[in-house]
Length: 308
Ligand SMILES: Cc1ncc(COP(=O)(O)O)c(C=O)c1O
Image (tube, rainbow, N blue to C red; front, side):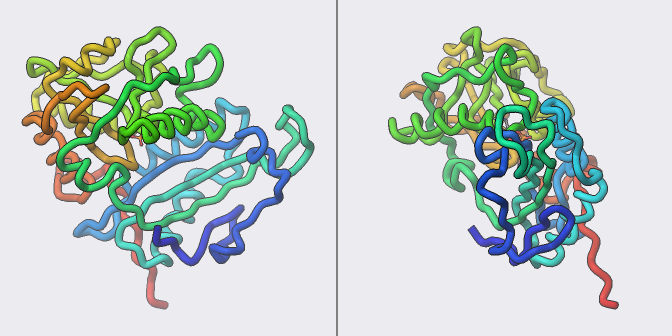
């Protein structure tokens, strides 16, 4: 992980090693934070932050669902992110904004604790490996169910909720797989530990609906649009576990993994990435890297700092 020299912390740029919080930070004890994972790509127009505004809107919504106001405006966070990227010299990078309940009263009521914010950037390669992105990864269905809206808030990208993904990820790695697919509380397919899922059968693309405990993924939305623009029928409906194993093609989407095919589930072969996956992956990759003029507005190009 090649990190930048600076981190933006509560409105100031501080040295990476000085970006510290108190050990009684509320979020460290109770998971009361919300965050985003964003990527910026090298393009012909400069470094482009992919769907920046959508990520900032989701950050605000996640905060709202946990009774927090963003301590800085989305425009301020966007500007700080541009500055960080420009000052880091990175042509492409991963961006992690975090908003959390800070040091203050201990106990479960966080409402008196300050809300703090930071943005960090670092260089980060293919999350599930370049080989995985090319040829697909192997996953198992997790013994853990995806958090459901009767106990938590699947729509919020909240720090504490990620214990669910962490357990599923560890379980999958320890049992020899690269990723886990979680079912929702009703036993329908929900998503991966940090990815949404698409299942293809007889030329039709299926993905679980908002009510299946999914995070409303920005790359999911992107691939839904790309698939429909390419003329595919795309249906949002509940998916049974067996449909993943019996699919012609399956792929995962997320900021970290981008688009990664799934080639095996529970030791049942789905097969190498198929033609529909490949076609969507190619257009998606063009969109990320600024090679798809029809999706140019998805990239928020980092302004080049003036020399003065
Ligand atoms: C649990 C979970 N589901 C889905 C996703 C995919 O979301 P996105 O495409 O916005 O990165 C992520 C990644 O942020 C995630 O953590």
